[in-house]
Each structure stands twice: as C-alpha cells, then as structure tokens.
Length: 197
Image (cartoon, rainbow, N blue to C red; front, side):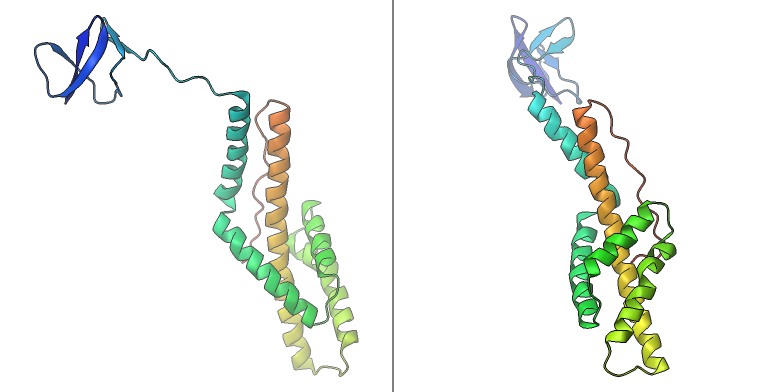
C-alpha cells in the first residue's frame, strides 16, 4: 500500500506503507506529487487538456478503422489482396477479359439487392461463352466441366473480395460523412456471404 505525505494540502511525497503523518492512497487512484488533498478529496492541479478538434476528428477516424477491422480484419484484407491478384492472372490466362469490369458488375448486383448466386450469374454465362469461343480446340465435356468449375470458383472468390472491399469503402464514406455532419455513423451491416472463402 502507498500513502502520501501532505503539507499545506499538497502531496509532497509518496511512500510505501503508512505512517502517522501520511494519508493512504486508494489502490485505484493514480496520485502523484503535487496533487491537492483536502477533506478526503484528491485533485490533480494540472488536469489533462481537453482534446483539440483535430484530435477529436483523428479519434473518430480511428473508430471507422476499428469498425471495419472488427468485421474485416487486416489479415483477411491482406489475404484477399493476394487471392485477388492470383485469380485475376489465372482468369486472364484462361482468356477471360475485362475481369475488373465483370467483378464490379457482380458486386454492384449484390449491393442492389441480388443474392450472391444471382450476382455471379450476371457474368458467368457470358464469361463461359467468351472463354469457350476463344479456345482453338473445342474442349471435351469433362474438360469443359472442370474449366467451368474452376472459373466459377475464382469468380465467386473475387466477388466475395469485391463485396467485402465495397462494404469497407462504404463504411469509410459513411464514417467521414458522419464526422462532417457531427453525428454518429450508421454503418450498413457486414454482408452475409456464405459462399465466400
């Protein structure tokens, strides 16, 4: 236990233990030399200054990040970026062109009320027709099934990434808008995408 030596209502020393002339310091109190003590009340003579407007805005921006990371952690975002890069390359090798435009179209479909499967179907059939037409040799039925499954799997993964990324971007926009309007942000719920990795 710590106690304070008081002189003229000011803490002049803090000691371990207790003496006849000291006042016990409660365990949950962070008392320092220079604090005032009068009638059982401890007072900090130099209380911390209130945060500046810039500090308040910075803290509010940090809360936006905290909200996003709560549902879409940084580790998952990094993993998504790596998957996205790899799958875009593979789809390019398969002959799928305008991958980003297709993913954007699918993501937009999801955010305008379409289900995950409906969003995929917005471009999947077109991709497959485009892909099959670009082949020099017509694939066998088995090759076609494997190719379709692989392309659909990659498109589903990319759609999941696009949806999570768009959600995060919308949270940033809402958070900044709320700061400007001096109100609490109203974030959309994290999308429930059962088919994403």
